[in-house]
Length: 212
Image (cartoon, one colour):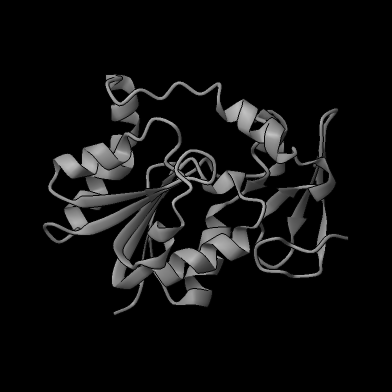
């Protein structure tokens, strides 16, 4: 058995295994996660990220990000203050939100390691295609809760686990930097535990609101 890296339950069970990695599932929060011994070291992880080509001028990339930006903007007060967590080497969502009149800060472990950005509080946080990369999802989740003001929003994008049959053929698990996989049940567990409002939009957008 493995300890869950999200809720720390000591009872997780084998979920799936392929030629690359073994995956476990927590019996409490239903997180699916890679065997910790099969994660990349930091240098290999960053080398993989360096291959990403996210261009703020790419209209297709902007359309992709608008799936979280549009519903979030509808819910924000004018001139809100936000943090784009895990913004990557070519921050784009932050620019889109700035264009809507919101003030943005950036943080990324490898590309914008500005610790001062993590010492303030915000009206909202965004993390697009980030949460599946986290080696310490419990720690980062708590960090997000601390960074968001009462009544504030957390806007996430990630592909979610459906069932083991779908997982077996799922391209998303094949990215070596993807190490934790959430399902709707996982977010529902977190929302109930932490008393957050929860809304799913489409297949990969999750909005959570901290209580006032």
